Image (cartoon, rainbow, N blue to C red; front, side):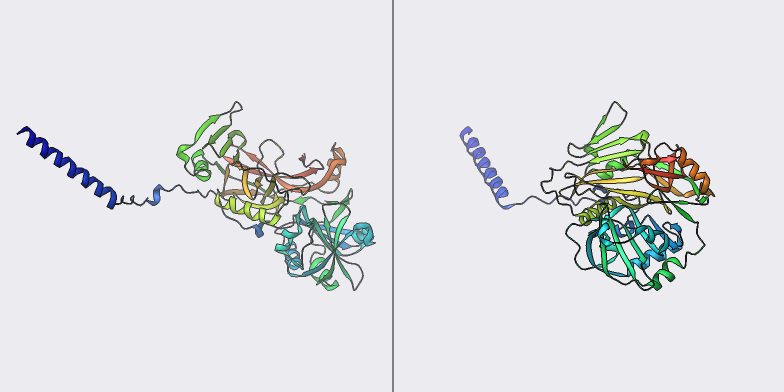
Length: 430
C-alpha cells in the first residue's frame, strides 16, 4: 500500500513539473496596468513662456537732432518703437570690417552737427544673433563680433552712412549698401522727436544726461515665494528620492545624487546644477546657446516677468558659456547691486547642455499692483550728484532703472539712476 502511495505522489510531482515547464515555455508575463496621468512627474510651469526674439532689443536710442541737440528714447516709447521697427525692416548689406581711424570720420562733427540715431545694445549682441532680428544680408563675418551700437547718420544732404560698432574699441563694420535715405533721417528718425522729448547733454565721452527731471513711475505689488515642492517638481524627475542638506549659512540643498538645487531663502535666490563633462571645443555658438537657454527656462519654471538678453559669453575666455537675461519692468531694467541678486536669470552651458541655472524665487502678483508718479533728478541737480560721486571716473554707463525692495508682503520698484562701473558692478546715485 505504501509503495502505491509513493508511486502516485511521484507521478503527481512529475505532472506538476511538466505543467510548470509548459507555463514557463509558452506563457508570457502580462503587461503592467497603464500608469495614470496623475502618477507622472510633471515639470511645473511657474511663470510665462517667452521667445528669444522678444528679448533682443536695444536698451536705448540716442537721437542726434543736429545743432548740438540730443535726446534719448527707451523701450515702449512710441518714437523708440517706430525707429526700431524701421531699422529692423531695412536691408543692410555688405559689411566691411575696418578700424575707426581708417574711416576718416570726424565723430565729434557727426555727434554735434549731423542728424542721426544711435541704436544701442548695452552689452552688445553677436552678429549672428543680431541677424535674427535685422535684415543683415549676406554671410556674417566668421569673427562674429559683438555689436554694441548701430549709428545711422546723414553725412551730407544726399548721403547716409551706417556704421556698426563692436565691443573692441577700434573695430567697426561699415555697411556698404543700406536702404536708408536722408528723407528717412528727417521724417522717421529726427523729425517726429522734435522738441517733444527731454533735451540731453553729453557727459564724459559717451554718456548723455537729461537737462530736466526725468519722469518715472514707482510701483508696488504683491509678492510670494516659490515653494520647495514647486521647485523640486520643476527640476527633479522624481522629487520623492531627493535628499535635503542644510549648510552653515542657512541655505538648503536638495539633490537626487546627480542634480543639485541650492536655495538661499533670505536672498530669494536659487541655483540649480547638473554636472556635465568639461567642453573640449571652445568655439561658441551664440545663437544656438541662447535658443537652448530660452527653451530650458520655458520648460523649467518659465519667466517671472519681461526679460532682455544682457550678456553672452566672452569670446576670449574659454570654458563655460554663461548667458544672462536682465529683467525689465516697462521700459527700464531691474537692478540690484546687493547680495539679493534679484533682477536677472543666468544659464550656464557645457557642450550645449545646461549645467547651471540661477534665478530669483520671487513670484510677482501684478493684479495687486499700484503705482504713483515719480521722477529722477536732471539738469543741475544730477550734475551735483555726479560731482559728489567718488567713482565718477570709473563710470561707463548711467541709466534709469528700478531698484527692487522686497518685504514679506510687497515688492516695491523704486526709480533710481543706476551707475555701471568698468568693473561690471552696479551702484546707485543716492
